Image (cartoon, rainbow, N blue to C red; front, side, top):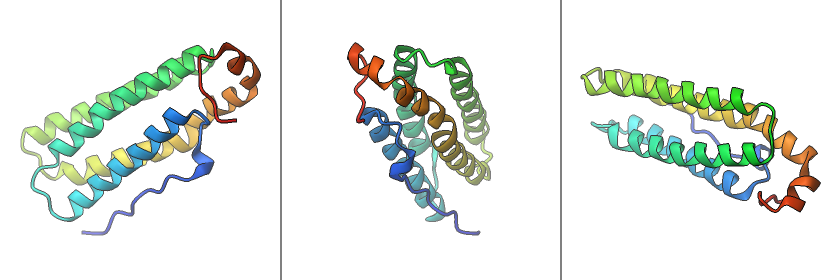
Length: 147
């Protein structure tokens, strides 16, 4: 089995909302933990995957709040991407629970790639919107920004 490389959060991936950046760093850590579990031959990946899905639900909710408060025009497309991810993971989990243990690697790779691409590309779209509207958002006081 080839080694799956971990993902590394970098400051350039910041959306400049401290709570979201903290959650993104934690999600990278969770995915890296899943990679470690998979590569160490863990028998059951279900508990850590469920933990990630639970944490993602909290994170997606927080992002939704930020995007709605900021009146981000790409909100619906962004939210659709979240929903597609959830459906894909639910499909993986069903097959995994039915005994398809080979899905572990595919599932972890999918989660790693999706998380990395989503946070470093799609999330940057609303980060740009926040930056362009920083003065209005700071005046509203509804979103805590770090710029």
